[in-house]
Image (cartoon, rainbow, N blue to C red):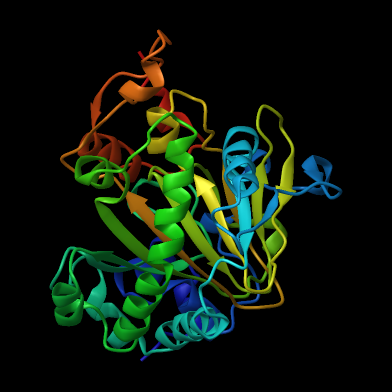
Length: 359
């Protein structure tokens, strides 16, 4: 039974307990009809994306991947990785019905009862590779994000079949399989731009030794101008392959500027971004840039990112192929498990994590 609205909002501890510990998430706040944003979701002014720092006449490249063997595709992808850190791909080969299905699946999971979703919280999940939660790291964040999520780590289909929620496991596995060719082709082209001619088993473990798929849910927010869905950050993976719905709200910080650019939803497109591990491997040739998601006052938004990570036991640093002509390394060699621990034990803070990996 959900507690009466005034009782929940009477103090911050009760809001935190309701959203985080009881597993209702921010969707639970919406379901009880809150009319004003609880104070722990009100972002400081410097963290809000306002019209004064947004460019509306610029956007990230959109790359037609209908012919992966066309040298222009390789050039466009590597150029986007260097100059933007983000790009969209269209005509990539993943069927539109698979994309639509996974978005519908996201809504279906978050519309489950709190009792059902709570089976997958950190305290209750039978597998550390299945996690339902809210915001990012609520215990470590000064201000919370207006987002609920389900995170699924893929080690094997057998493990996924045993532990992933029945409401989404088949669809999530189908989506991962459907994206596999796109992922491999993009990584091959990006590696070609770094003088890596072959992705052998060792390189594959370094680039995509672990896959994680997230279902992100951003419910309607009562005061969207005061909040964010996800605060500014860069991803720590190698690359991220993101499917967004038609609502919009993803913003990217233009490299070496203080302006933000909206990534408009393009029907059937996948958004690709370079992440910290690949920036490190490329010795800063490829850019992992800050991005964030604004809150929305009109619609419930979903997105589905696939994160391609090195294995936890991998050591990341500038690739030898990048340094073979005498280029000086900017980053030290660091165990990827140590890098992820730093990232997940604090709130989002822009690109501070990657600074710790520099020599």
